[in-house]
Length: 453
Image (cartoon, rainbow, N blue to C red; front, top):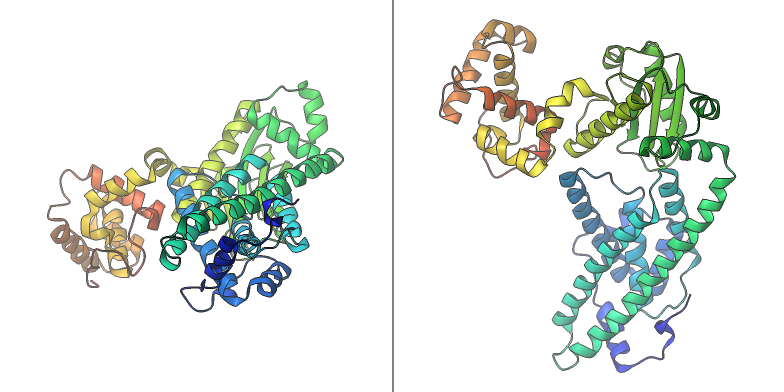
């Protein structure tokens, strides 16, 4: 895969290389936070040096954070391996802009791994290409901005054209790698029984053409006509490998606890799993399950459903809970639909939910333990029909402490909690469920945190 990068060196090309030589990471330690395979990092270091390589890693991390914020606002699920994909593209871009024509084997290997993870998760190439376009736009803006800072006005148009052409070729190279890998992955999955089963489940969930019920049950080894609970499991802080067995074991443990007599699981990326349990299942038993031995393992749990419609609906409920938990950064190991249903109904648009919470809670949205204690106390007070004694028992604090905090909240809010508190109660529920997605970050935020009470 070669393109215009093979053209001979021009004056603009020489200036482009000089411009790239000015790239440096803004902060220290950029090269200690690399996510791609070490061979790709080594390739970039050998071709471009520590400055451009560190800049590319830092740029990729910033772009990934921006894309993650967009996903959380929209409720979309993050692309598997996106942090590594964006970083690989940034490293390849600075390497290609230095005049390298052919993608190194390290880049091809990284794209292979990411494509495999996306295919396993049922993510199509269009999602990867969408991410590629976003990264291309960000890189173009960054390089053009550096051009206006470092290149004289007379030479800027020629250098920008050179940057544009070479960057386009670099991105097209990656797009071709993605397309080639997806073709290969599709052929591999045709011969994999587990992959065929997963593809059938995804078709069922999508409402596609179905074989007869008996054939479907035989092919999946799971009866879709009975009662189901759906789970979605994921690892929030895992490196991206070695999760499959731990997640499946966790799913089986939870579903056995819920008295499930049948089990179906579909991989959802390197750190994700979709699972169903059938039989006389009881979702309440899962809520009381002890946390998993492995830290960072999370489970979203649906309400029970029945038959094929219930199979799909239960999965959609679990996926909705997963999106909410990911957006909120929630800490519990198990997130069940019943406990977050109100937030799901009212918090679909996180931007508007945050505005509503800010209007209703005002200073109580501040970060830090003091504001958190006030929110928790006021919510408990309202949960129990404004009973100081019941709230104190639930929170394991003195009755006078509850009274003090309630009074303090009333002062901060500028109103009594004895009347017209429905909207306030809803805002507190959203704040408890959605966390920093609608509140100031812990210890931060523009609003000053109240002093401990």
